[in-house]
Each structure stands twice: as C-alpha cells, then as structure tokens.
Figure: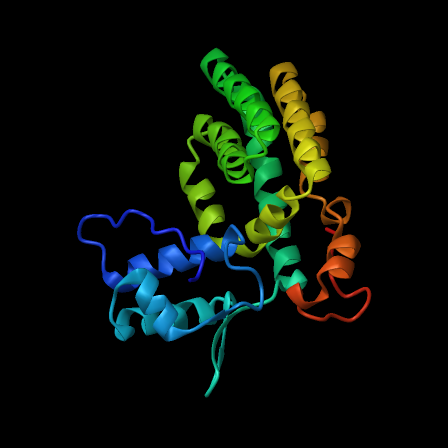
Length: 239
C-alpha cells in the first residue's frame, strides 16, 4: 500500500483537486520518495476514487515536474531537479530580503511574542524528532513577518510556486544537523528583527537559503537516483 496520508477534503472541492493536493503533499514531505512507482490500481485503492480524477491530477503534477509519466509503464515520483530548486530559492531570496527590510520597521511586540513562541515550539519538535511538525512551524515563522508587512499574498505565492525548493528542504530536515542549522538561523533572524538590524536580517536569510550549506554533495552521494543528473557546476547555486 502506498504511504499516502488522506488530507481532509474541503466542501465543494473537486475530486481532481483533492487528489492533486493529497499526492503533492506526499511527494513534498517524502512519504513518496523520488522514483517510487505509483500504480493506478494502488492509487484507486488508497484514494477510493475512479481513474479519471486520479489521471487528471497526475497529468497536472507531471506538468509541474513532480511526476514522470512513462507510457506503458505507469507513473513515477520525479527525481529532484536541482536546477528547479535553485531557481525557486533565488525567487524566495529576492522577495524575502525585501520583506525582512520592511519587517525590521514594522514588527511589533505581538509579532515578537508569536515568533518567540514558534521558536520554542520548533525546539520541542526537534527534540521530538518530528520533521513534519518542524517544517510546518518553519513555514509559520516566516509567514508571521510577511503578515505584519501585510504581504500574506506574497507568502501564498511563494508557497504555491516554490514547492521544488520546499521539497528539497524537507529532505534536509531528515538530517539532524540541518534541523539544528535551521533553528539557529531562525534565532538569528529573530535577533536581527528585534534589533531592527536590516543588514543582519538579510545576511541571516541568505545563510538560511544557501543551498551550498544544505549538503547537496552528500545527499547525491547517498541517494544518486533521487536527483536529476546534471552537468558539474551547472546547479546555479549562486545568486
């Protein structure tokens, strides 16, 4: 049985949209690892739906680079494309450094209390070895200062358009040292925001999103089949 978590289906949500959401969640959180085959009969058994909405969702996921459709063979979770990861990271960094510049002026005491609470919860999640919770708290931490700048729409855009980067980061959350690295970066961001130090905030987010610090070589060495082969030096990790 495929390890897919069935998410709640919203009122009025189409079957295709729900299937898309469920499979994407499983891929991003690595419940479905890269290159895993997903047979239609298996998907029907798990999702308890007909072939049509499942097929439509798979086609959409394939167009976005998360699924590989192989004629006469089936559907496979696509390997991680580091070129797409790098592009997504670049977009995130360009937007976030501007948001942090605004947040240094706009964060109030209520925002700082919220950020501190989320940091404490992240620490608890690390101690509990709960990667999914840590990822969710990571997202909430960043969303908090987008919100105080009244740019929730930009955060929503990043969440829906940076999923290749998020998928790569979730993979790294499985490494204990990267959990601590992420937490420490959040502490640095929090400290910079409290001091209203814009340069320090931008430096912290640059480190936080620096792919070269996220063990690319190690991950490829350990799981080469998880990644799209690329020409040496073509990953584009520089800004």
